[in-house]
Structures are given as structure tokens and as C-alpha cells.
Image (tube, rainbow, N blue to C red):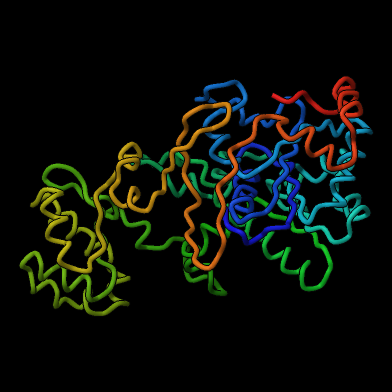
Length: 398
């Protein structure tokens, strides 16, 4: 945990992955993140595998450096406790549809009345100004709506989802960045703000940086698509015994590669030496990689390419990464002892920093683990907390 956002309090009402991953980043940067859950807990807690009912591996991997408070916001007492917390907070994050937040009494106007300086971030499926504002959305829906599933079609042209929750995780990083921007505004001006971070718009903007292509011009000069990305010959190339990731990119790389494979005449082609011609004829060059790759084993290619500056890599399986030499050297995977789940392994924050104090990460909390400590901070005594539990305003600590 880095001491960058020390003193910043974040109220995290989000669930599943998008919001929790974003607020975990804020926690990694030192913010105090209070994860406010309903009495049953975040649904992602129950996604398997897991050693206990409410501590699934995916949940654990996206909720470190947080405190968990269970609170029934459908009760008046729960709502009033929440408003007390709002007065102490710098940031509020949720991933509800706007109409749901307003119905619960936690829309921006209501929250601003309790804390005008708060940075309020709503991560919705679709932007509030459009006709889909009230439509439900999860990662698969956004992959389909954004064009990603179509762009990722199989060989027969059937749209398919990526085998990872890419929309959730991309927009999570946009959300974390938006919060940081909001905090800068707050600290400079003393004023809070409302920030909408819609998944659909966020994913489209992510994809279209390079894919917008000819639509960038008015009038359009063709359709979408970045030729290099969409080349049928852009792939991990089959070697004599496996595959290799290989990407000559610059003029220097291509010349070096063709000389390396004893075809200097290819290095002199205009589609190699002229970057515009190369961009227009990238399929032809990638076909050459496909032709040359099977001539050597993966080890032979790696040994040969190591003498050059040409980008290349072995094609790893996910299961290979735990023992990857580089990742082991930088300590990306850490073993630790969780207070209730026992010996665990986590993926640390990918950042490294110098000149910033660093402390140990807090383990992912059990459901309602911080109920008593947070409510004591609000001035409630043990008897009052017990009464709230009996009324179903807060849950029992698990």
C-alpha cells in the first residue's frame, strides 16, 4: 500500500468487479476504503472457487485494502447511518443505475446536501443522457454492445466474448482515474463534483482509439478497422515445436529480421523501408513471418532473437505465469496468511514507486468485519450496535 491518498476516505457501494477493482486501486494508493454491502454481501463473494462461503477467490483478488460494513439502506436507520458516513467521506462510488440510487435516497443531489465537497462517481452501464440509461448491463452485455464481441469473431465470423471480463476491468481503470481527477478538483477548489463513468461509452472509447480509422474524417473515407490489428496473419506464429509472439514493428526491426533469416533482398523492399507503404501492406509482411516461423523451434527463435532488439516472447499459458522468471524476480505474486482463509497467494499492485512510503496491504475483509469499529467511530456504543443488528439494520460480523 502506497502512502499517496492517505487521509482520503472512500465509500464504496459497488459490487462484482468494475467498482471494486477501481476502489482496490485507490486502496492500494493508501485511501481508506469502506466497502458498504447489503446484509447478504456482494454477490461476487459467492463466486467459486473459495474456501468459505463468502470469500471466493475472485472477490478476494479485487477487494484488498478495504474495510467491510454491512448496512441495510432500505431502512431509515440504515440510511441515516450512511448519511453520517457521507459527512466524513471524500469520495462515494457506486455502480447502480441512477434511478435505483435516487430511489434508495443516495442520488447525487441527496448526497450533496449532506456533503457538498464530496466526489460522487457513478459507474453505470449506459450514460444518463441516452435512451439506454435505465438498461441493465454486465460485462458480456457491454462486450456485445460495444462491437468488441463482433471484432473478436471466430474463424466462421461468429461473435464471441473474450475469456476475461475486459469491459469491467477497462472501465474500472477509467473510474479510478476519474476519482483521482475529482480529488484534484476537490483539493484545489474545495468543491465536490459528480462524475458519470458509463461502461458502454468507456468501452467504445477504448476500442475506437485505433479502430475508428476512416470514420475520423468528415466525410468518412471508409469504414472502421486498424489494418494491422485486423490482419488475418497477425497471430502467435507456429514454430517447429510450439508458438512464438513476434513483432518487428519499426523499419529497423524489419530490416534486422530479414537480414537475420538470411534474406537481405526482402529488407530492401519498399514496403519495408517506407513506413506508409508498410502500413498499407502489412498483411504481406505478416505472411512472411508465418512462412519463416516453422523453420526453427521456439527455443532457437528466442536464442536468435535475443541478439537483436526485435520484440518477441514465448506464448505463455496462464498456468505458466506463476513460475515465470521475470514475474518471480519482480515479486508480482505474493504469498501471505489471511486471518480466516489461511495460506493465500495474491497479485500485488503492478506499480513500483520510489520516494513514497509503503506499508503492508490489508487482507480482503470478511463480510461486516468492520461493523463495530466503524460504528464506534460514529459514536455508537456496543448496546446500540447490538440493537441495530437485532433490527436488521446491520448484519452480523462473519
